Amino acid sequence: MKFASNVLSLFEENVQRGYGRNETVGQLYARELTTTDIVIEHATVLPPVSASPTGVRFSTYQAFDERAKLFEIGLHCVGLWHTHPVSTPKPSMKDELLAANYARAAAKDLPGVVFVILGTKPFPRGIGVWFHDQKSLRQLTLEASR
Ligand SMILES: [Zn+2]
Image (cartoon, rainbow, N blue to C red; front, side):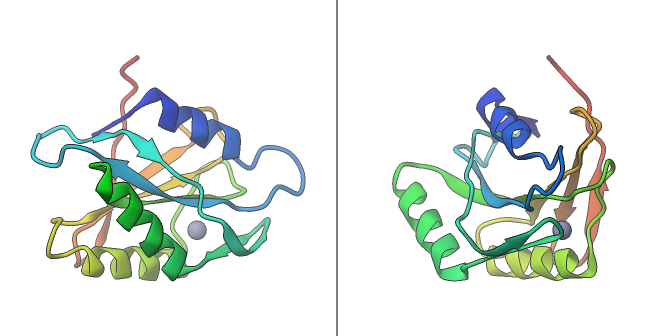
């Protein structure tokens, strides 16, 4: 799996470095799902229903609407990203539930979903990537290739 540079830039802009920044959440998209090496080509920011430095909530309706719109231009939602105000991110209980719900909702199209959490350490160390296969959430190891 690879992240396009525009996706990494969006991540970088939203990392919670500095005092009082709220968590941010968005969806991840790929154009091609049949290749062995999936490229996350596009990432969005979902408008928060509520946000604080330690949590963010979004509208599942808006998330659905965004997926439908981007699907029309050939982009498939493959998961979610959000930020945590810590150096090395780890999924919370709520995050595990969210990832499981996404994985189950996507089950007819995808073997699982990508779940990214951005911590405050410089990339790639601050990026945590997990994969939910409808059963459990497993962390993937990342390597920089630029
Ligand atoms: Zn979280």
